[in-house]
Length: 116
Image 1 (cartoon, rainbow, N blue to C red):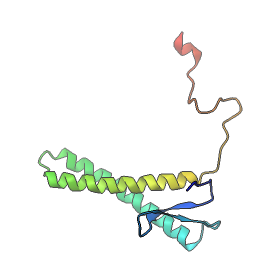
Image 2 (cartoon, rainbow, N blue to C red):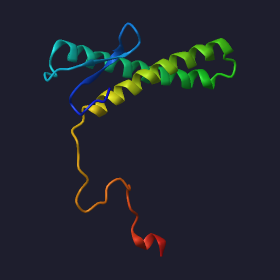
Image 3 (cartoon, helix red, strand yellow):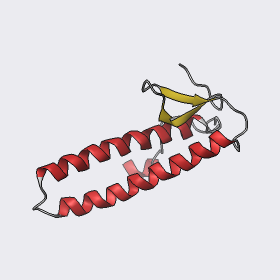
């Protein structure tokens, strides 16, 4: 499915068959939109807390392999959620055109004096 800007919103959960769920709505203040916003906020908070926990676990040289395995499993789930949030929010950004004086996606250009 091709998603056009502002056409469909990728929701932060999957359907019963594991497929992505989309919301087609112009009203960003509707019940499902608010539920999705709250879910995304919770997913991002969990990922942040998990990142802090991971640093603590990795500092402890006596961490058991099973604890590391659980940590990596939880982090993989959080990464999946955060990626979905990023994709969803990226699709909802308004399209932008590069400034007329720039060539597009070449990134920042250092001044010529930097190369002598």
